[in-house]
Length: 84
Image 1 (cartoon, rainbow, N blue to C red):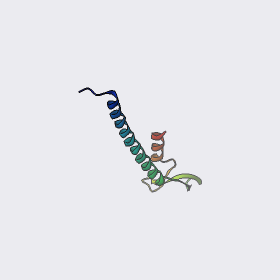
Image 2: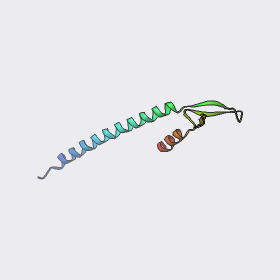
Image 3: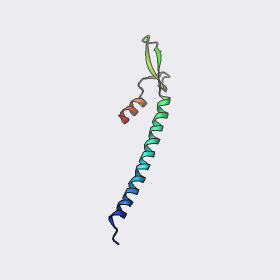
Image 4: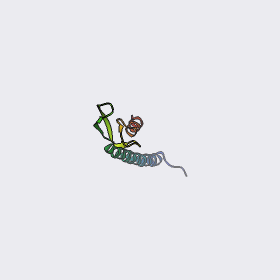
C-alpha cells in the first residue's frame, strides 16, 4: 500500500510528539528526584573540635565513626558532576 507523504508525515509527527512528552515527563521526574536528594544533603556550619575550626558538613551524610561528612559530600559531588 502506498501512503501519501502527508499521512506518513503526520504519523511521524504524532510519534515524535509522544516521544517528546515522554522524555519531558522523565526529565521532570529526574529533576524532582534530584531536588528530594538535595533537600536531605544540605550544608551546615559545624565546629571541627580537633582542628578548632568551623567547616561545612552535610546534614544527610555521616561517616562510619559517627562524624559528619564534609561538604560537599560524595552525594552532592556526584549529582553536580552528573548534571553539569
